[in-house]
Amino acid sequence: MDLLIEEIKGAMSSKLAEIAHWSYDGVNHSIKGNGGPDCVNYLSVQRRIIETIIACTIGVYSLYWGLKRCTVPPVPKVIREDRGGKRLLLVLMCLVFGIEIGFKFSSRTVIYILNPCHIITTIQIFLLAAPPTSKTVTALFRIHLHCLYGAILAILFPVLNTRKRCLESEIYWVQHILILITPFYLLRTGVGGIYTVEALNDMSWAVLTQGLLFIYHFLILQGLGMITQVNLNNIICPAVSDPFCGPNFRIAAMFHQAALILLVGKIYTKFSLIVLQALGTIEWTGEKYVAMAALRVQRLCSMCKAQMTRKAITNEDETHTD
Picture 1 (cartoon, rainbow, N blue to C red):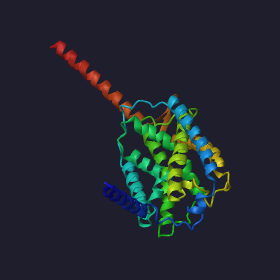
Picture 2 (cartoon, rainbow, N blue to C red; picture 1 turned 120 degrees about the vertical axis):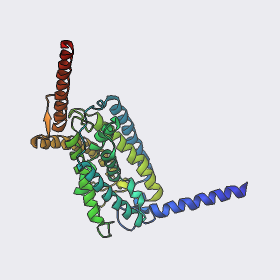
Picture 3 (cartoon, helix red, strand yellow; picture 1 turned 120 degrees about the horizontal axis):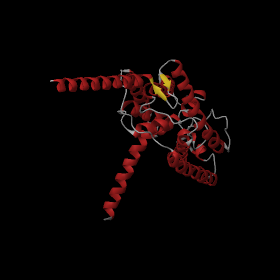
Picture 4 (cartoon, helix red, strand yellow; picture 1 turned 180 degrees about the horizontal axis):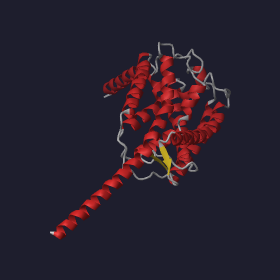
């Protein structure tokens, strides 16, 4: 029995070592802000515990408050047909993300796929690929709109000191630009359909997103970061480009991240709607924005129904005449 237990332990240790080899063994701890013992010891254990309790308390309450108030509209009956642009964007997103994953595997740093911008890319690939016939698509679309601040921060404060391979830095820029383009395209094709946005004065989805991000960072990313000594999304120690670098960098992050989740999501949505309305792609009906394509389909459907009704009446009159 003891021999069997030892064999199981040995097999588990070998498997964990294999996973560690391709997931985070390639992380260079000598690069500042990348991880390592100095990064793990940047804050005391006591301070990490206190900040984690505060952040998770805020996160759980935000989830409760947001879930209680957010609503998802019913799935529309009229859906615009895909004209190819959506598939083209999907192929481009998959290509860029596939190259990024390839870089991670070749450098043995696959653990970085857990960073929020990669999660958002995965969500956008799902939004582009999934049939627009589910409330889940609308919910994910609204949540991910309030996560776009991450791509903007990545562009304003890029961390490129770990990207040494050919085209690795270029893929960084392309991926984050695509993250900002995709929601605009989905709004263009789906306002009034499945890719809808809440009212600008509705804070429930922003608060819900805040709760998800706080819990994800302080429980999942911090937990894995402390175990592997990898600075996932700069939750263990500040990034080299962090303007709030210092012992209070996570306290500052709670404030500016909460503000950015709300502001960037609402500003991006409002700006996109203004541009789309100026381009004549969408129309304000007095209650909501509706895609012009959807309106045309509805009008055609109304005309078809009217013609069918007239035809039925004519046939009925002819029958009575006979």
